[in-house]
Image (cartoon, rainbow, N blue to C red; front, side):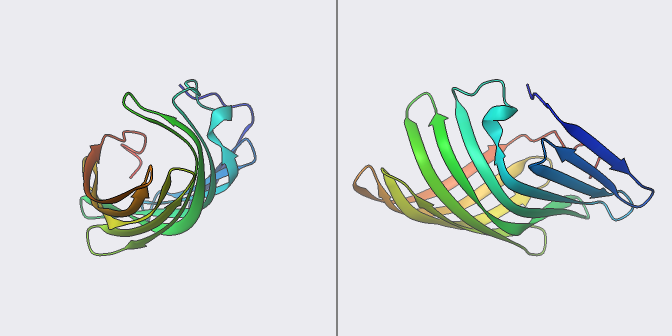
Amino acid sequence: YVYIKNLKIDNKIFKQNIFFNKNLEISYKPFNKNLSIRFNKFDTSKVLKNKEKISAKLTGDLRINKKNNYKTINGKGSIILKKLNLKFISVNNIRIKYDIKEDKNFSKVEADLKGLNINGKFTGKIVWKDKIHLKGNFSGRFFNQKVERDINEEFNFNFLDGIL
């Protein structure tokens, strides 16, 4: 569930702008099938129902383009992951700086993760067709242990279905 306190929609023929809580701007160009998202210290805890599982502050710009049957992402930014509670682990106050570059049918990702119990780098790619497929490698330190781990995850993200 998402709670929205302040919503403004600017609807034009060639471009639609949606502003959430003054910290999140989404621009959509329906004829080009691309989407721009700008985060300005956007606090997810103000809009998410389940704040106990995840809470973050987002800053940055993302552009999502549709190419054939794929969606590609381009952008830079940072995330302050204040809280992440999973079944097997709980982590707090992780700073993530990311850089995502569009390639053919995928996007290249580089991210630096820093926090009390984590310090490392993720490099990989995002393939987004029906699901978002994140594949790459994390290397660094996690709970004072040196870690080199392959990451291979899939996510359902239905929010943009029908738009892109």
